[in-house]
Amino acid sequence: MSSTETKVVFWGVRGSTPTPHPSSWRYGGNTPCVEVKTSPDTRFILDCGTGLRLLGNRWEEKSTEHGIDAHILVTHYHWDHIQGIPFFHPFYQSQNRFHFYSFQSKYLGPESLRKVLEAQVASPYFPVNLSMMTAAREFREISGGDQFEVNGTRVTARWLNHPQGCLGYRLDTPGGSIVYAPDNEPGVPEFDENLRQLAAGADVLICDAQFSPEQLATSRKGWGHSSWLECVKLARQAKAQNLFLFHHDPDSSDKMVDGYLLAAREEFKPSWAAMEGMTISLNEKGVDVALRDSRVGQRRRLRFSATISGIGEDGKSFEEKATVRDMSLHGAYLALTNRPALQSDVRVIIEASAADNHPSLLSLRGTVVYTEPATEKYKTGVGVLFVEDEDRTRD
Ligand SMILES: [Zn+2]
Ligand SMILES: [Zn+2]
Image (cartoon, rainbow, N blue to C red):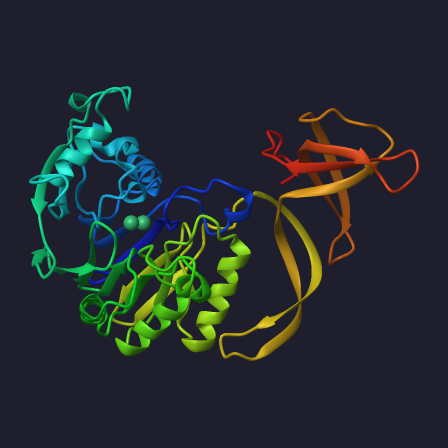
């Protein structure tokens, strides 16, 4: 990380409620939490959804004696933006210090964020009480239009259009500018103008894209959210450099989010759909987006040839022969003469011809998720999910 590089990591990208479900695992089911690191010791956290727990675990792995000093910007008090707070381990370590920023809610009065935090760990909602949260905590009340400086980064807050209020943030960091507008419904001129000003020329625009344009015009009108199409319009008007669709609907499958991204890219090429584990690097050379940690699952080494076709960064389609070096595997359907028990272990050994004609063995441990009569007579159709394998010697 160079001295003027800023790193952004998405730890939670889902709106409204967590979605730990296979149909949304790829983009991820954790509610909003975005980490921004502007220098080795200057860190920001944007919102405290369930993604915050994962960030805490990562920080704990790398924790040092002199502790963490971080600035936490909360956009508003809806569950999906605060529910990770009790599960963030660094709050329970006395060497750490946190600076919280949010607005005074008319429902909660002065020190709204402190009250929210304390209520979350009050009995009977949580097993340990506030005295266990030993990290130093400072709370600062801010409002739309406020601007302040943190170690060379200028933070600007503006009101967005959302039930019970929401602040959007802009961070002008030494590496570039990041705008975070997770919950906002377009259509009210005053708030639309706020967001346009906040997003003006931003290198990274993280934008509420919860609904489809059709939903936003009909059944979800007035719910306080936006669509990929509105994000695209905003990105164009504000001359943003890169757009990140964010706050995916809990009912949006990965396939649906893929569709929104595809549609957005046709209108505004530098568009991305925020995904858990996605990282953005900003520096004087520009913006680089990576997803290196996302290819999880049952990865196995196995070399074989394949023909790969796709679309290059230049927009042109390509096809080439290449060597596959490993694969992530999720499951298989087998026709067996035996009938294994549900949720029992099976081992699947596959022999493949490698590119150089040497056989390559792939040994996988699976768990049986269903059995049914197979189309072949006297056979059982067995659905298997591949799971972690203790025996990694063949990897
Ligand atoms: Zn939300
Ligand atoms: Zn909200």
